Image (cartoon, rainbow, N blue to C red; front, side, top):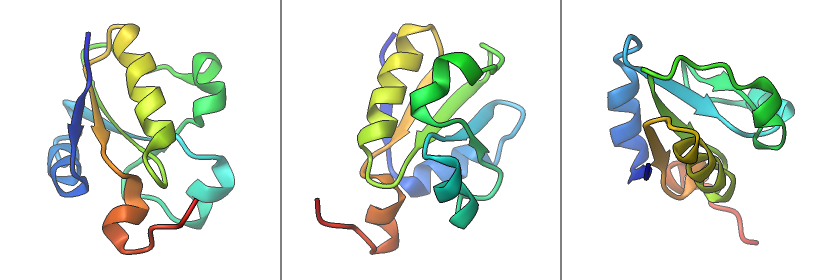
Length: 101
């Protein structure tokens, strides 16, 4: 199964339907505590296999700061059979706070 890349605006619109979608923040807990999208569940990418417990009928919208971790998480979750949307570029891109690598 493949994942679909979307914008933050598209992801937030889809996430309004909480019956069908789960908004998943794959950043470290300290980053999640600093700031996160409303309604997001935190499950860091590094421990995802141990912690992820999402109903397979729900669609997952994944995000991180810059887009790299969410891309890897989306790829992994899609292989596990989840229907996944990845927010391209991460939240910093859309907040105008894009950090240089």
